[in-house]
Amino acid sequence: MAPATLILRGGGDLASGVALRCWRAGLQPIITEIPQPLAVRRTVSFAEAMYSGLVKVEEATARRADTLEEVQAILQVHEIPVLCDPSCDIRHKLPPAVLIDARMMKQAPDIGREAAPLVIGLGPGFHAGENCHAVIETNRGHFLGRVIWNGTAQADTGIPEGVTARETAVQTTHLAERVLRAPVAGILNACAEIGTIIEAGQPVAQVGSATLHAPFRGLLRGIMHAGVFVQAGMKIGDLDPRCDPRHARYVSEKALAVGGGVLEAILSRPNIRQILWG
Image 1: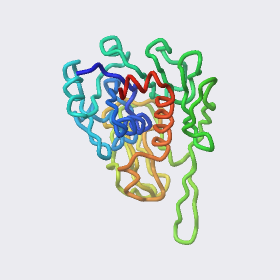
Image 2: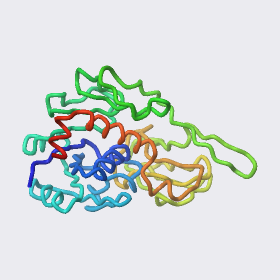
Image 3: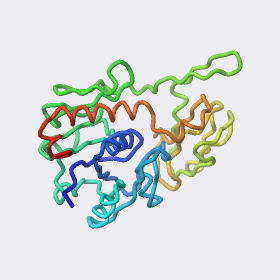
Image 4: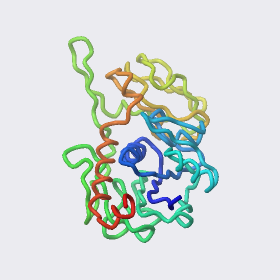
């Protein structure tokens, strides 16, 4: 088989939207991850394969790979390999045409633009022309998903986007409180399953000796995997006041928009198109 041509660092929900769009376009992405990923929206994150061995996000299947041979076997059946490789060392064995850093670290990357003919970074921390070739805007708003060939993405605001739900005759908008954060440092254990409706005040998770309660009624759209250690204040869950169960099963419009930006960046380079599609 031909060498791998597209590697994504990270398999969280945003990265998975990118991987899904690339996979639908006929590409064969490889995802590299850490041993215990900290994805919140696990039902739409290929990173979950690190725990379960196999995960399906919409119509795409990803499998955990522990060796180069397993990566190649998974690619041959048009599935997505998820490899435990925090340093992305696989790039030395299967040199990519495109390397996408989708980890959303919000700081300068540890691998620069020399890593591949086209290196793409998502969001803050990347500077097109310096540590990557292109940056994709990840901040919601008018510029979401745009490709930046010179400069940086918008700075991280630290403020989650508001979600509005109609409760009886009243519209209520939830901002920061919809992002569930660890009250203390400790081992996390969920008290509810993703996709279930949580009532206000209901326990959502146990972190160490502290219990996190739902601030309002909503759909549990995401919660970190049980057994991981989290720091106080870390995002560990996502509560959606719209209570639409589909929101737990489908990749978000933000992830798809960012994925569209990645495809635009790839398609705008004739030499990369030639490598990927022939």
